[in-house]
Amino acid sequence: MSSTVDPLALTLSPDALEAIAERAAELVLEQNGNGSPWMSRERAAAYLDLPVSRLEKDKTIPCHRDNGRVLYHRDELDDHFRALG
Image (cartoon, rainbow, N blue to C red):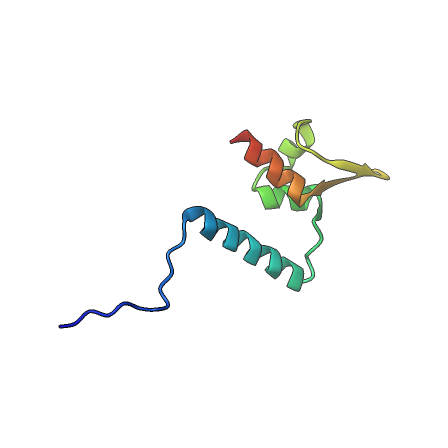
């Protein structure tokens, strides 16, 4: 029995796989019309899988105020929570 090597096999590091998955998710959001990185408090809470009350109370989570609205930027949220470890 002879063994053959699949010429299309590719081994990825966990970091490379994560980067590909994140980029794929960004592309899906952009294509579905939800590509804006700006989110309401409710959308940000859902994105982070946190209760809305946590976003309201935690003053360290980056947000922006616009005429009474509170907005969150996806990249700032990602950076903030990555920095927490």
